[in-house]
Length: 160
Image (cartoon, rainbow, N blue to C red; front, side):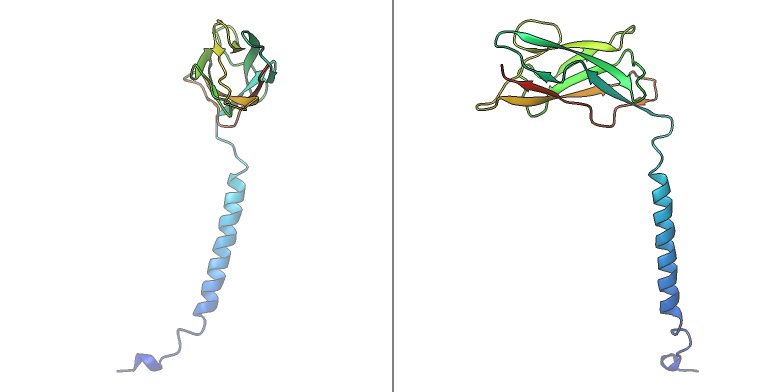
C-alpha cells in the first residue's frame, strides 16, 4: 500500500482552478444581478400624490385647504383610492386622518389647521416648533396592479 502523505499529484493545480472558478462565478453573478435591477415589478404601476399646495400656513383658529390628487407615475388619474395622512416631523392631534377619492374623481380635499371641517388634520406643534411635515400614504384600489412603494411628497406646515 502506498503512503498518501508522499503523494503530491493532486495538489499542484487545485488552488489555481479554485481561484478561476470563484472569479468566474462572481463575475457571472454580478452580471445577472445588474440585469435584474433594470426591471421594475412586472405588471405593477406606481401611484403618487400631487398636492395643490405643498406649503401650508394656517392662521390660528382657521384652516387651509389643499387638494390631493392620486395619479400614476404616467400622470393617469386613479379613482377610488384611499389616502392616509399622518404626522411626519409634525405630530397630528386628531390622529391619522383617512381620506378617499370618489369613484368618479381622483381628488380628495384635506383641511389643515384648527376649526371644524371634514377631512381635517389638526397639527400639534411641539414647544418651540414652528414648522413640520405631514406624510401621505396611498392605498390603491383593491384588485388592481397599482402599488405605492415609493415615498410621496410631504406637506410642509408652518405655524401661522
